[in-house]
Amino acid sequence: MSLCLYVKQDDRFIEFGKLNDSASLKQVVTTTIYSAIGKYIKERTIRKSKCTRTNEKTYFSNFYEYLKSQDCHFMHEVTVGNLEGYRKYLAAKVSPATVIRQFNTIKNFFSHSVKKQLIAANPCTELEFDQPDEPTITLWTKEDLIAVCSRLDERTADILGFMWLTGARNCE
Image 1 (cartoon, rainbow, N blue to C red):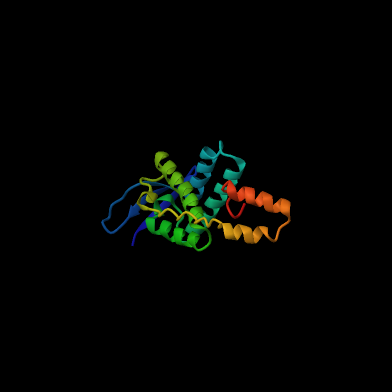
Image 2: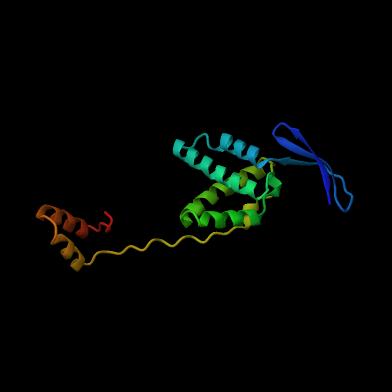
């Protein structure tokens, strides 16, 4: 069992007198995840577009709520296991490309936190992502085009035929 006293100083908590099994006393400066995210958003997103800022705030809000549900409140408490769990949590909700996009933001956040000495090491360095497979594109065959154009008026069929000849995708 270990006992410690936290004292709030500015937006950081200073841990005093941590006494563990080896009876060592030390002072450790710890930062809450909430305040670190606030600093990052204030310092790093100011030059980004409004849409990107909004997206990143949503990413961090979801990330913070997940960490809170894991009883993780301080930067030094975030582990690779927490990040893996969050990745699985996200993967169940969004596409693989979105998971990668959100984790790139989270990696930047932790890199920034290391530079600002809010944590000693970046827990994201051990994470690896497989790039999502590129979506396969199915091209229309000439027979497909003829079948579709036979049901259209002449002008629309000519436009569709022109698009097919110039390489337009099916969805276009």
